[in-house]
Image 1 (cartoon, rainbow, N blue to C red):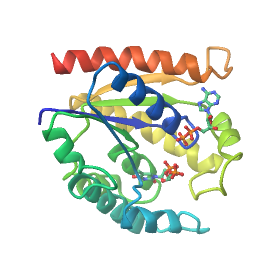
Image 2: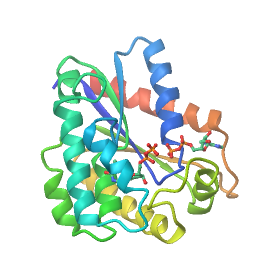
Image 3: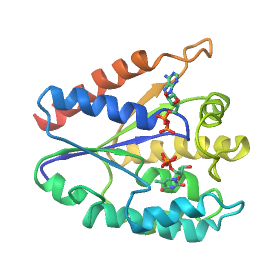
Length: 214
Ligand code: ADP
Ligand code: TYD
């Protein structure tokens, strides 16, 4: 694999879509060959997932299977762009708005964590994860201003998911993934601006990419 796989992770409303778009543009402007992707995808399985997330109750085992299938689709078939595996073979820096650690953090709310890991074992580990750490209250305030709420967008669930992320990402680090943790609020708990968070992400991600692509 010649390229680099970068995944942005965090709870809903942490700013993943915002920062993936901004950092990708900056890196492309700097001459990096960048491709972006998003999960759930816009492919057939991703569309089904989005419909199910509007329901009152979801079956986490079924969701775990669907998210893993959608991910393989993304890797092997692509979703409106090159399949991720092919892009990596061609040397792209592939930047994803959510990837396998979302499955482990979200679906293990109810599904057995080790089983979710097995379902995702055909998906290569990312080289780098950017984790945007935002308090649940801030995240909920942001998501309340957009489309109707998805199943997971609720305080109790997001609090547990955030804890799951901490644990899962520590384990990923032990397996060799570089984890860039970025605080979404300052020490006093005040929201950091998009520009400030973006600058930190850009500088730290660029340094990791230079190290990996050297
Ligand atoms: P996600 O993809 O993680 O759900 P988005 O990128 O869609 O999150 O961001 C959710 C909302 O929060 C958007 O309206 C975005 O403009 C806003 N937002 C993102 N980052 C910040 C920030 N640092 N400060 C204030 N608002 C932010
Ligand atoms: P989200 O990124 O919010 O999609 P959109 O920007 O289209 O609204 O993802 C939808 C939800 O799916 C979000 O609550 C996180 C959740 N999710 C999982 O539960 N498991 C996964 O593997 C992925 C990729 C997402």
